[in-house]
Image (cartoon, rainbow, N blue to C red):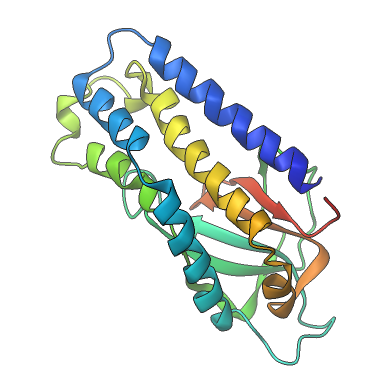
Length: 216
């Protein structure tokens, strides 16, 4: 796994999701409004903010001196869910990870790992690009979108809208991690030379690679 392949996968998933949403029929106007908000989101300003957050919050991830005894296999950024508290991803230092088969398109992280003491649910990164999606799924308004006997996932355009938000944001986060050359930052946190930076929702199991410490 390398950063070029991660970037290609994220961009492809973003483009596929956007195209699928644009082709969907009978899409509720509020979903259309959320999609427009994504199109108008200022990812340039977000990129600058993200870089500042990483530099600032990374000081909370350090354990000095870093040694082979406290090195970490991965840095996990985890948010709650797209329905609640989506815009704040906490950071975790993953240790003793018996890695499953890894895929650039995302994989089940499993539960055969632990977190390094002191590097557990500490400040990570913000995901402000998900705010319109969280607003759309506010419990006070969701009844407008879905009938009582249906799941939200069955609403026309919903899943492609979610993926449009998610992969648009992840593509930008990946680019910031690569272009800002943050390897030193991750090395100071104890990330191994073959370590990964991943992001996922709480208790979903599924995570998406954002950055690989391996050669590009």
